Image 1: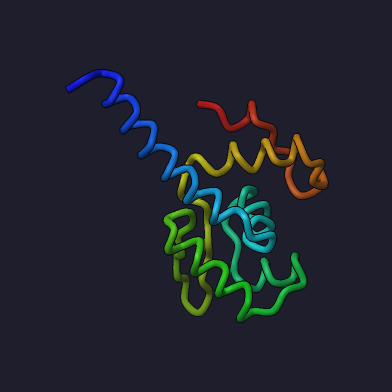
Image 2: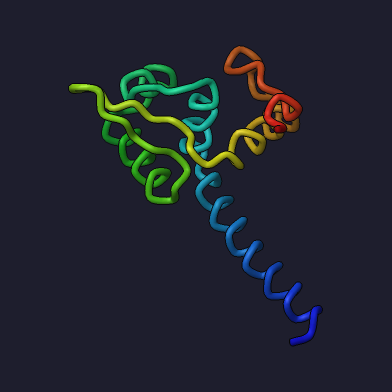
Length: 116
């Protein structure tokens, strides 16, 4: 098999995966939820209060992020805590902070903070 064909196929797979991630981030509410979660685990209630969105809507958006493998839920009694599990997301969020001027009070995260 030609090396160029292999590289093109790998690029196509990576591009499809990146496009899927960007689709998940393309909803403003999901993006804001991820901005909140960059700072660490949060409950649905904490996210609701921070964003002033309804519980059902926040839960729906979290379910989408969970289905996309971006966040995971951990039950603690009656509370469900969410956290970002896809390690590629925090650097993307940090870059968005830098480029689009999200409030610094949400997180002091910079792209350099997320590099290994």
